[in-house]
Image (cartoon, rainbow, N blue to C red; front, side, top):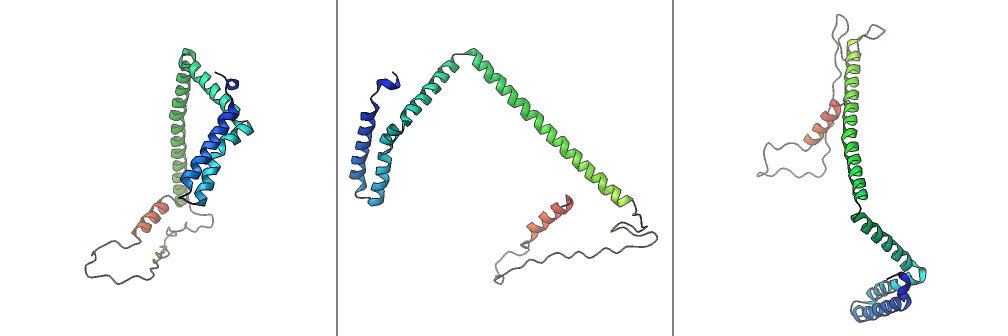
Length: 183
């Protein structure tokens, strides 16, 4: 059965009329907005016919059906599926190794760079920051932790947990991680 063997105008007109009747019957108790929404849905079949969308959808469906029926019974197409799966597996396994190798290389280069900075004195004869100068001691600058700002905090009740972690412990962990990674 082809597209031309069906009289699409009467089919679409009947579907639209049936939709409008059902919209009126079921939409009256629900209100005007529900009836307008139902009318919009009901007009889709006739709009599809008038714009030629039904013919386009028929051709798409026919092409998919022909492809699927030819695909299911064709050993050549199944071999193509197997080769495609092999390609995907090969890409997945090799790309992960390259990323890990590149990450290891960057981490090693950063560690060597940091070690070189600490070991080599500067051209002026002064020691690098944080290291004692020749024959002397260096004082490290005091690191001050930011204090959390707490607004509208109620006093602790007698029954509250004792020894509970302060609210900024999570931030301290994050800061430690970032500091260890050099960020």
